[in-house]
Each structure stands twice: as C-alpha cells, then as structure tokens.
Length: 198
Picture (cartoon, rainbow, N blue to C red):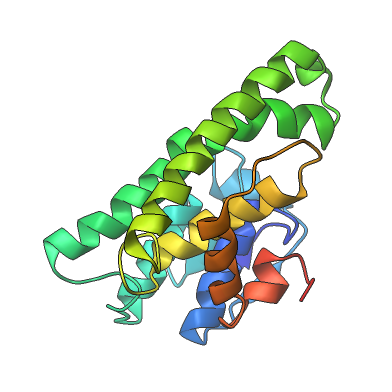
C-alpha cells in the first residue's frame, strides 16, 4: 500500500490519521511527482493498494476503515453509517467551501482572495458552519455522529484545526473545544491533526 501526497495537506493528514487509528503504515511518497499520472484531477491524496488506485480523501478513509473491518469507525448498519457519512459529506462540501476565501487570502496569500470583503464574507460563512458543528456536539455531548468516535470526527477535526490556526477573530465554541480535547488522546491526533503540536 502506498499513499501519495504532502503531509502538509489537510486531506493527506485525514488519511494519515485514519491509518494511525487502523495501525496501518503505508509507504508515503511526499513528492507528488506521480500524482497527475494516477489522478487526472491532479489532487492529493492518492492511495494505491495493489491494483486499486483511489482518490478523494474521505473516500480513502472510508475504504480503509471498511477494508480493515473497523465498524467502530464506519458502522456496518445503513442508518448508523449514514450518520457518519452525512457529517463527512458536509465537511467536504459546506464546511470546507466556507473557509476558502479567508484561508486562501490570509494563509496562502493568493491574489484571487486578497479582497478584504471576500475574506470577511468567508469568515461569516465559516463561523455559521462552525456553529452548526458546535450545536451538534452540544447535542451529542460526545462526537459528531453520536456517542462514539468515528471517521466523521477525523475529517471534521482537521477542518477545526484549520479554523483554530487561521488568523482571524472567532467566537468561543466550548463544545468544539471540549471535543478537540477529547480527541487529543487518539492515535495520530497530535501528529496529523495538530501539526505535530501536543
């Protein structure tokens, strides 16, 4: 098994954290030199498992959990699995779309996102989305899909780490802070979610 993509990528780190939970240690190629040949979209990560080539980080995480039979991370029953997947899908669509303007403008210094109005709109949308997660975690009192840790928590925590580290004003979200503290004991959290910071 081989994983391609720089570990500085939020999406590569989702897969690395999932691998840590599963006790897997795929060969990791940080160079991205073969990405375009394996993924016409030109995006990381790419997982090669024998003859199988997979792209899209959340799909890779689901594949690995299913491959290892880890129904605690990705439940087998349709209703419970759908709860996990719905939060994973929300992370990849609504939540990650919200932060693009401010993150690209203030962290990546991309000229297309230099307009302060674009950044401010992004902050408002991102805050709105994070309040949805705050309300969900307040409701469950534990994890995103309910009482147990799942893949949904991995992908959402990576986005939350980006929320914590992007230079901007943000409201206090106590349920999210408590959840991130709970996650800190998980295998791979410090290395792959908190950028190596305990």
